[in-house]
Image (cartoon, one colour):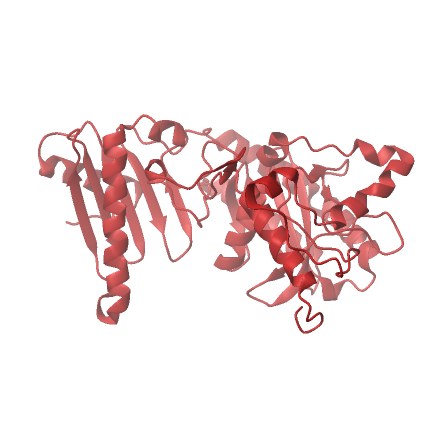
Length: 397
């Protein structure tokens, strides 16, 4: 951008709008969502605190499914792939705010999953006031693209951060894509989500299909999002494979519906029947966090259960996690110990046990408020949890 426009006006616009939108974007969408946080509430700037110690940001939350459901999901993925012919498509499938399937790399999966939870899932759509009724208001539609193209900050942003430094000489008609803006997605009659965030096709009022850049393939992809009840499908199609633009994308979307609609209905029904609700991953007597750093995946006690912990327990866990991070940082500096196993236990002021075990890229954090007086009892409780819910990954015996 600086090579094309050395004055820096265009670059400033991109950076300013991204930072402002980013600070407003990270909103919690559901009780079991732990990948995002609420940075900006009114005019208060809120950072994560010790109360977030049983969360791991920058990770994906997976849905555990049975064998029959897994077979149906895999069958759906094959149908989606067959719709592409010889073109390599990619897909993500989410149920509620949890990932069911992905054909992307871990990094691309994490990015798109996080965006989906923020903006695309049923919880994200219902939390906003998305309305596309203005499309039916005739001349009022002429303001849609113009307004989305302008990068003026809101009054709240200006008063909180100061006015933006955007030079008057820059091109005010250049479209700055702002995908983090809220309340800009809505579900169309055909089940696909639509947005004006990527502008419109040149010479028309047809909204442009969103495009994303994949890190793994270094390729620009169309992003088509289809939703049926609690099921969200994200399809990524190479831009280079569709030479006739929006007309070609429309044909592809229709083909997907024709080929996969029955499979989509069946998968959603299967997953809904097996879904245990927001407390599905609660384990009685435990407040825990599991992290698989190699796969960028985490699972934790439901937030409604974590809030029952006392302040003393949360402070102790926060201190424990700081110690673990320090040990991990030291291990990275010493290449010989980068795979070192680690176990830490702290007795909190309220006599709760706070435990951490780290092994082979996986981490377990646990709070036991009703444990016995002895460390042996607490250690045994951690062993039982590891054996039953983690396939013995964190077992010491």
